Amino acid sequence: MELDRATAALRPRDGWEGQDLGFAMARAWLLPLWLLWWLSALPIGVLCLFLTGFRPDLWLLALWWLKPVYEGPLLIWASRALFGERLGWSDLRTLFRAGVPRRLLPYLLWRRIGMRRSFLMPLTLLEGLQGRAARERRRVISNGSGVPFWLTLVCYHFEIILWASLLLGIFFLVPQELPRLDLMAAVTDDASWAYWISAIAYVFAFSMVAPFYVCAGFALYFSRRTELEAWDLELAFKTVRESGPKGARGLSAMLLIVGAGLLTAPGVDAAPMPDPDRAKALIAEVLEDPDFGSVKEVEVWVPIESPDEEEDPVRLPEGVKAVLLMVAGSLKWILLAFAVAGILLLLLRILRDRRRLGWSLRRVRSRSRMAVSESEPMVEASLPNDIAQAVRQRLRDGDRRGALSLLYRASLAHLGRLGVEIPEGATEGDCLRLARRALPRAEVAPFKRVTQAWWGFAYAHRAPSDAGVESLLEAWSQWTAQAREEAA
Image (tube, rainbow, N blue to C red; front, side, top):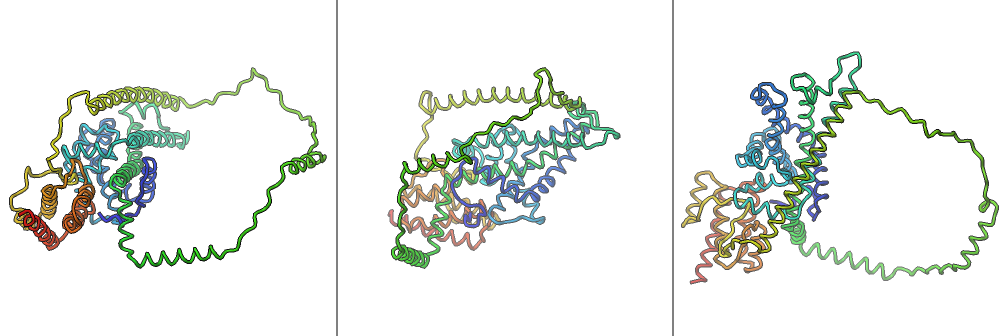
């Protein structure tokens, strides 16, 4: 991942600042994201129309349930755009293939009603995590973050507000001489044409809120990773390293000039402190003047208001009253559901804390087991005996990702043999920092090259050439051979 190509400032942000960053991204990229949402949803909407037998209620429910399918391509597009890469029409096939993988299935089943979907989807689509590694990564990245829950709740209410505004706009803009929209039928009678208008308006609300929801969730994920992996410090050190001594000499010269100017600057005489007694006397003298201290009594006529008179209440159309009553009843049940959900979450939190404090049995993890990078799930139960031959075989098969993944996991295994303890759930940046602390710089250099190549492939989708992988393999072979010679 080339952090210096990021179009957003890399700095620590709290949850609300990260959400604001996502909304700013959505405003900047609204048109392409909105069109991409319709390119994803329109074919599925037509298919669901036939599968549901042209029933608007079932059709709307199906489109609502399949929201993660439309949000995946938006997430991939936003993640590329954040690092300066704009995908065009020719990249749609790649975009949909990366945005709607098979591992997205849990978000259409038991995780569909989760309240942190846009925050956790990057773990599946961008990092490719599955199974136990994904669960551990979700636990680490979600620790202490409640903003994604409120983001989902607020965006859901924005959808309702936008849908209701569209219906009321249609109702009030149609002249009275023409057939007007029946608001009651638009929300209760699925056999009327008004219900179809209501369903289409709700889908339009989906399309307008989705770019903001996806970008805000991705920005929260981006901010959380910046905090966990210190991307801002890494970029700052890289900038200082690239500037070299030339930049340091320029900074020293500038500080010398500024310091000399401050030393030769003339002094400034301070004004004397005012006397409080003299100031009070001056104020009293000013107030004694008729222009400032006089008091005038003025009589004016005011209307007499009778307490018995009441203003005529605003008369709303019956359809509007019905919609407001329905919305109020829905909000009551929604608040009740959230209260029950909050109690259940509190109980789960208490049980989890009890296990964490040791009040129940805990399964002790073996410290000797080596962790695999969470950006690539464990594909094989163990590494092959001949790493070089296996890597070259995958290159001949055209599987560069598999070759680079195998080389990276073999590098982690070699770190373990060198005595570097890598905890389970560690990211690539964590592994690199642990290696730098435990090993000399010459020992870390080959692992750093493999890590940077894997970062570029896994996150920036920059596949290295076969020659590049061969070069990494040769450096890895020399690295491991040198370690074996020293051990012998």
